[in-house]
Image (cartoon, one colour):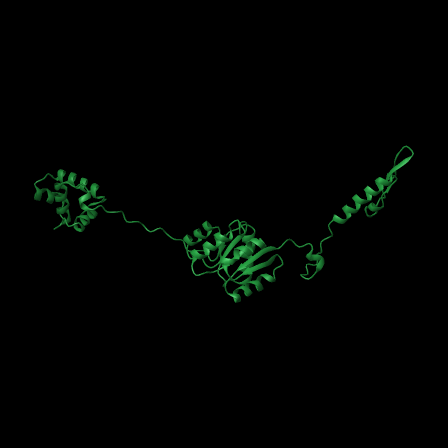
Length: 279
């Protein structure tokens, strides 16, 4: 490239090849120092080409691998803890940064190591484990960590309790190693996981509260009609026994059913039997 000039002084001349950038010629000595310093800084911060061999022991490739997900183990049983370490140790993008056998003392260690994911071993009760989850995610713990419980959620109700306590899901330890690795990766990426899928809990129908007889406000005639109904009589038969028109019997019966909260004749008759109106 031709030199750029200003009057008789030569200001800057670059060589054509990019590799010659550090050999830029600058006439002014101050510019020379400043220019070489800037170019040297750029050269030091330029990223090295990433290794493409993908060998796990390649030192060049290791410098270009993504930052590993930091995992902390809270597990009372040393054999289980060692097994989890063995499973996770062979995965390049996961790193076990600490462990604790005592959930009560794990909060301080978790606060110090700041893991991305905490694997919490199963305790005596789900309630106790959920209390540990809440403690781990307090400000003096690791509030941004994702917590996975190493247990099953037997029902959707238990799954809801885990989520409300601040957990990100759960799985049992009888999963294959690759499934455990996938579970940790999924939760670290912000997902929620329950393996196996919990059983849905269908709400049980709640029986209506039945008012005691003395709180229904039944009149004497309405009680008499209910008593005859409990004997299995029709409206016409009740009318003949009580010397009432059939329409009047029907009106008393409708009022009695409304006051006792019964939706049909059969339920009204059973109510009368339960409360001793049938004699």
